[in-house]
Amino acid sequence: MIIGIDDTDSKTAGMCTTYLGALVVERISALVQSTVPYLLRLNPNVRFKTRGNAAVAFDVVLDKREMEKVKQICCNLIEEFAVFSDRNTHPGIVFLTKEQAFGIRSRLEDFSLRAVRDFITIAEAKNFLGECHIAHVGYKNGRGLIGALAAAGFVFNGLPDYTYELIAYRKPGNWEKKRFLVDKSVWAADSMSYPHTWDTVDCNNCRIVCSPHGPDPVLFGIRGDDVNVIEHASNIIQSEPIENRLMYITNQGTDMHITDSSVAEARDGRSYRIKGMVEAPPQTISGGHVIFTIKDSTGRIDCAAFEPTKNFRGLIKQLAVGDIVTVYGSIKNKTVNIEKIDIGQLQPRVTMRNPVCSACGKRMKSAGMGQGYRCKKCKTTSSIPERLEAASQLVSGLYETPPVARRHLAKPLIRYTDEMVVHPSR
Image (cartoon, rainbow, N blue to C red; front, side, top):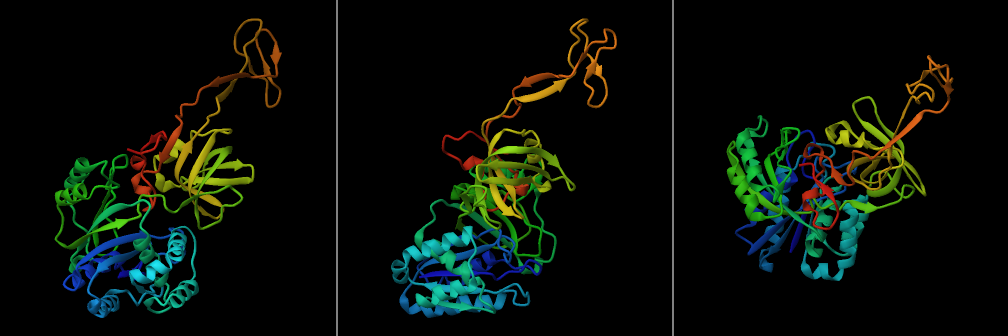
């Protein structure tokens, strides 16, 4: 059986759907032969998303006689721990047998992928569940059924690319208190495990990024591609007491949310890879955000390196009109929020300076706004400045935002194994 769960937490009151997943594994362990947990990050642009917009699912092997007991345990856990007092929390849980899944494989795959890349309505999810006779429970308006079904679908269909995250959870009595981690131990864990783990720390910005700051149960999460290295790294970290922990298979760090698009086809609330030419040079606006414009044969669109991307903005400021780039990121208010940028063909950088006097060889002075240039000594004039071309200081290749600004789904450049030229942030 596959179990999918979503939307049990709250942006303001805490909790975490992945924590509920850890409780599920703990409480059904005596009734099942094996349990494989999955963590699926959904479309990061959805209006009603939870903090990380994560749904969880479990591939469970059990005796059919235990199915009803397992279902009841899962529902009881949701009813005990979900933050029903939050008007935006609407839990959902689905129970899908492998026999059912085989018959609707293509529909499941389409639904799951759309949940990561697009928008799905509650009505659509409920219709799917009803038509396919999938057992489910939707609480309140049932919005969590969308993510629950999507996560269950990915367990069955398999992730085309996947990583792992080991999440350590706090004891309930500490949820409202400031987290305690020994900073040196976190940096040591990262030093030992990188590049098989990533986004534990941000070296350039001197920040620990594997630990959240809200009133939720998560103490820290170690992401990576090698389960043994992840386990070893987590054991190095010294911290407050841990209640439990769980290793998830996940679509984090895979760019699963990204699709190719032209400017004209790109829509708000989705994430794309768009190639174009820089039409308007980068400008820094109020708040420290850096904005520039690209165009292709279908139109033009603004692109932004927002202030939280920190040192990444320095790279963007070096772009010039005529450069060919490919931007990766989500669209909001018809602006690309850049997650990565592939810098391709670069135009020569042109600078203008006052021309040299043909008589004496000294540089002329400006004769005034719009009046050209004049040599004070020889009285010669010119209307044409001297044009100097130089190669760009930029190097072509793929660049990324730093860990402090990285989205869960964004693929770190250290994971790239093809022939692309990459420049990891570290």
